[in-house]
Figure 1 (cartoon, rainbow, N blue to C red):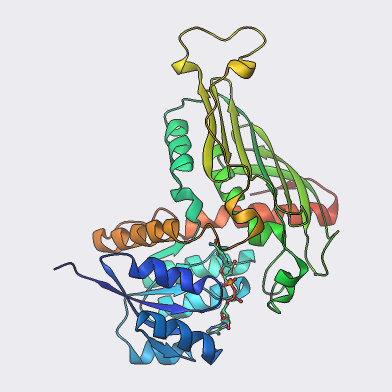
Figure 2 (figure 1 turned 90 degrees about the horizontal axis):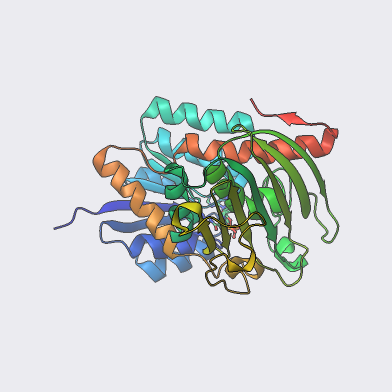
Length: 353
Ligand SMILES: NC(=O)c1ccc[n+]([C@@H]2O[C@H](COP(=O)([O-])OP(=O)(O)OC[C@H]3O[C@@H](n4cnc5c(N)ncnc54)[C@H](O)[C@@H]3O)[C@@H](O)[C@H]2O)c1
């Protein structure tokens, strides 16, 4: 019989139920308990999956035998809740962003080291087929010298989305706006594919919504490998358009559109060299959907890749290995976003150490 790891969830709002669905879809995982300080939410989720509901996660820790805790609370609570779970002896999966300040990122890494528990941070799009394929090709050096890497996230969120929770769009608990909440997925992929970012110039603003944090941002990046890049992001682009990640090198180009590989052309696959003016429309092109799954509705694209990432954590626990996205891997995308905020605030180039 397969040994099942026993899971508990803290936070049963929008994303908590997707974790429950993902956990219960895996043969070697079992959802045992859920906690939310709003009793109706905990009760509803517990009933659906025959788990035990708790109002207080500390009571859940004291009463249940658990192996893994999934943290699905507002972003500015991730550090506190993840550290509490690791200190209580549990392996921990935290929703993105890992945390929203450098100090709390450091504290999480310190507690992870101290307790020896596994820490994974959700960035489910790293498990998308297209992203994995491009990453594998980059590892082989198939794109040659990387020159340009762009992420464009022209999304739409109505005002009622920001009004749906007091924490949304606040510095204290969301840690930012379109960058820290929505775009972190694409920013994580961009830096995973292109490599770490060395320096940043940026503008941010709040042009459409009533909220504290930014709903539009544009940044120019220099990667440590010398390539240049851009991030452009908004939640004010009605009704939400195509999310694009573009990777360009002198031996190949790839464009991921709406989480799928929409374009890939590598010099090594060419029967003959492209002309002095490039391949143009003769370049190979795959299909791309016209509307981004997550661009207009945050919940449509979720589920399957969360299960892949939770399965990766189970593998890491069973083999005593490292999850693909551990705390170290999840730190840099947050640092990039904090760097963008600093540059927009100071009107200066920010160098990431
Ligand atoms: N990976 C993704 O694609 C994705 C999608 C949506 C949200 N998220 C992330 O998930 C996190 C939660 O977002 P959401 O949209 O589900 O928010 P939400 O407000 O819908 O849910 C958060 C829940 O946490 C509960 N909570 C708050 N403090 C608590 C505490 N001390 N103990 C127990 N429960 C507590 C709240 O009552 C609420 O039900 C955020 O960090 C967000 O960035 C990730």
